[in-house]
Length: 410
Image 1 (cartoon, one colour):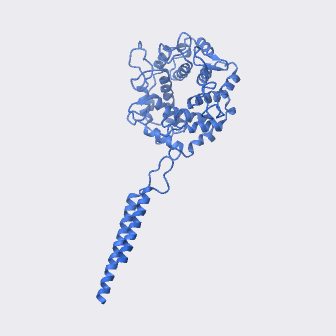
Image 2 (cartoon, helix red, strand yellow):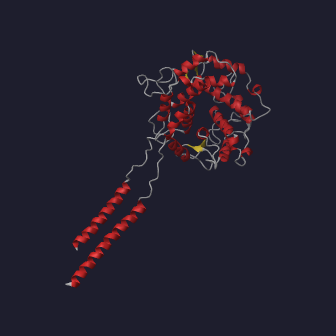
Image 3 (tube, one colour):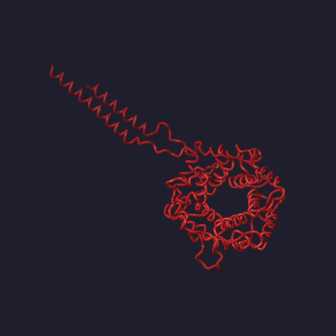
């Protein structure tokens, strides 16, 4: 009898040990399987930064398009512009290899071909790529940003020199007999290309002591007259032959005339015309808060909004903008991939539009820039209860039930 009792007790103890071992194994599985969930970006700025980091080309030093290998001047300038707005250029260690980026920018410059070619002095969209006025604007502004004193402590940055004279040579070739500038040599002029050209000339002249406005802008009077010939009422058309005035062209005209130091007739009329482009009613437009390109064109977008705010900032008209509405429109243009698109609810955007969005928010002030710190609805935080925890809990429950069942069998 006593032997039977001891035997049953031994069996019961073995069952308890089996149950304990089962639970212990389950706990081990818990520690192995339930690693901390990798944190998805939770704020809008984190989502954008993740997109920027994903498109960085660490070999070339520029930024690519998603799923592509070549670095592009517009995407690279977009990223650098955002870093500048976020005061990241002076962070140490540097957020990226700025020396490599400056070297990439230099490689975009067509200086190894004869001066007789249309490309000499221009900048490619990518290395050895096609040249146009926007590429030159982007690249020259990149050189300007990468030459700031805040980056002067990075070794060998000064060794990469910008050939401003070659750039001026190409820009000069794009000025037409009318006085305006075209996007490429031989094309018709337009206001945006004219602003790009004048901005590029202004920056390029700062790098060369022997170059002057008189040398490279063959007829500034003709340029001013051509710009003013694009005026239509209180707005400006892209060219005299265009059909309607637009926010982009109007901003480009204001910026170009300012570079030339020219007085702008009826400034308040221009300010009012730009202010009227902000959409404040859903009855007339799908997207409220942003700026449409022209009168009732129903095309509210980030680009038109950026250009309008840039001009209004220069003209002192931002106080009359509904800043809450426009900043909300801007952040709502953040696409599902973390970048910014032209309009809300897009799956993909671009670094260039992202730079428009970030710069536009900076015109509105810190309060509106802080919207980038709100939770990104496209990248919510992980759920409090992960499916893996449910699996682990199920394993523990099964182990516990199995142990109790073994005990009851005794």
